[in-house]
Image (cartoon, rainbow over all chains, first blue to last red; front, side):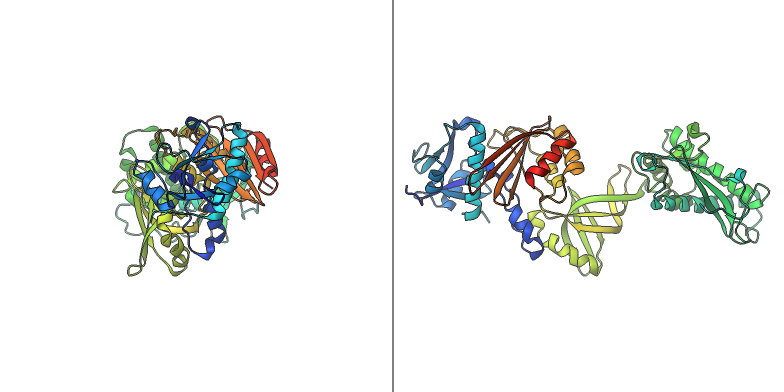
Length: 137
Length: 381
């Protein structure tokens, strides 16, 4: 992985509000409602401080979505940050290929809860600016 | 209050009392006067019925009987809100009618009859007690009497003796109307949040969905312009708020829209709608892990949010947390901000991160207190 490698993250349907409103009337609302939850980038308590992502060099956004939902997990689509963006926030990225080839982890481990939340907000901001990488039709 | 010609202090015909939060300052909202107009019309209808009962051979009421007779509000006094109505005729220079008048006698009996119907609805729990006293023709009047009362409000018929059982609340009104109507239906106001499901231009109608309930209404040209956007965005759940009059069935379910007073397209981030959606999450909603959100906590938070959240501020995007709490998020002026609200305690943790320089602000807020919301407003401004 290099600095520009995309790290794909699946977005649970409850962590996104609808963003397909298409009229000028809702222009402002579109910007706001296309928000995804910063929780998308917050490791779960069971994840031991690691946030699971797909290595964009091995999985396209669409591939990652298909792989994820094939395991009976729910996803509303795929957003991404780069390895470089994580590095800028002092978050190491590990190309662990575990439990499958192309799996990677963003390491939040040394951080306390509030620091995790603050960094998740910044990752969300990077991902939101980049836009959806894949959404099922 | 201007005095009616000839009015004497002891000539009050009808002295009801209104109680409830809106009446605490001893004023009467104009819409409530519509209810009294319906009551006046019902008195007239019953006065005529009583006359025919007394004179079975007559086919018409005597010349001038009930003609121009109205209730005239002469005074509003304190003690919650007590209204004094005189019985007045507009036929003869707007004069007050007294007990010596033929009209007065029948109106007095009509008033007693209405009180009897209302008392029966209050005191008798059987399903047809009102029906045996009333007449289906009275339905159209009872549909309007008490229609403008709110849940906490009561209209007592006799301010001197409010405990006599003659009073109208929203529930009592429903009971009377259900019993008088053929299909046990009744009309009432409605205030719904719905999705626009379809538009039928050939019939000039449109259909909305409230949960699994589908309702069709007439579609005027003005309304068409408003609903075309939420209709186009049906799949992305763009809700509309509709207020108006409708028909309810015996189980208090809205079954038909009679009249639309107002229709507004709601913000996609509308808090009430979002909380209603989140309340449906079940344990395990996130890959078998997410906890459901406390319904009691959601209800309390909604109440507090609607009362205290500053309308000048943008609405937050509201998400659940895996732990069963709420996570409100804003992106304002280069800052990513969040408020995690613990349910059901409503204790909250605010965090703001400035994207440019990574400055972080964190604060605990007690949103049960108004001060907590004032602090939130400052943090978001």
